[in-house]
Amino acid sequence: MIQHFLTLLDLSDVQAQTLIQRAIELKAKQKAGEIHEYFRNKVMGMIFDKSSTRTRVSFETGMVQFGGHAIFLSPRDTQLGRGEPIEDSARVLSRMVDIVMLRTFDQENLERFAEYSSVPVINALTDMYHPCQLLADVQTYVEHRGDIKGKTIAWIGDGNNMCHSYINAARLFDFKLNIATPTGFEPDTNILQAAGDRIMLTTDPAQACQHADMVTTDVWASMGQEEEQAQREAAFASFQVDDNLMKLAQKDALFMHCLPAHREEEVSATVIDGEQSVVWDQAENRLHAQKALIELLLNQK
Image 1 (cartoon, rainbow, N blue to C red):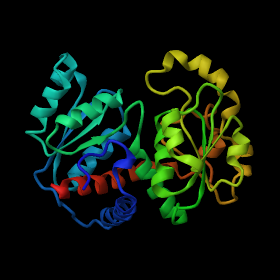
Image 2 (tube, rainbow, N blue to C red; image 1 turned 45 degrees about the vertical axis):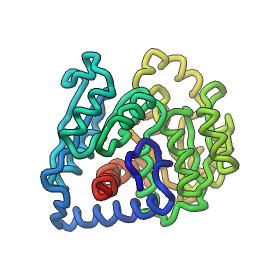
Image 3 (cartoon, one colour; image 1 turned 90 degrees about the vertical axis):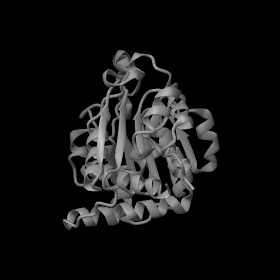
Image 4 (cartoon, rainbow, N blue to C red; image 1 turned 60 degrees about the vertical axis):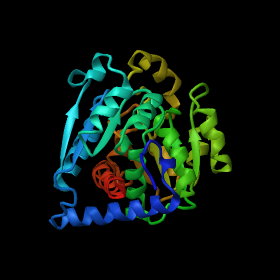
């Protein structure tokens, strides 16, 4: 039984595979115009300490398509933003809504909220993990290429929350992950070591891309790191995913990016707008994968 979704590893491998297939089914229902209001009158509380386009729209739209409702709460709209203890906010909010998604900075704060919540809590991004994005990424790969098990994925760039979630995904979905980061920007050691020999860590993007079935990246400076932009541009200058890097991967390799993208920084325009790019399917699949996750969490109640 899964109570909360704080990292990908809260799912069993069977649950993860089932969730991906259910996301594909829900996508087909939505495309066919089939009404699937399984959660009429259910309410999601959406707490945002970090702003977002895709996260807000996908969760809110998903609840509407399920026949439910979503309440957007920014720091200006809650007592959390005025210093109310996380424990108290969790106790109160979870008595009024059926499920909560939280997009915040500190993973510890998310875990503390979940500990005191009486309803399921979803990690919609922290500085440590971004597990909902990985559900969408895996769904996208499955739709285009089939089972991701045993494939080789290349992560090029910062050892950030997306990289951490890719490491966990390699464990959960059983694929190989080649990570190329500049020295000093490696992912968390404990997260890395827990994945064992599924991970290859290098400072050479070309080595990571060799024979990869998929290449993915993220912005060089994430939200809250804007003051490091110049330093990071220098450190990551040779880590742009361009046509030359993509040529080292398999001929049918996919390119993904969680967006928003900075063209001609972490990725060239020719790659993100090219034939191997599936970033728009990937972005859309946030909606469908998260609906499958919401369904899993609400049905257990």
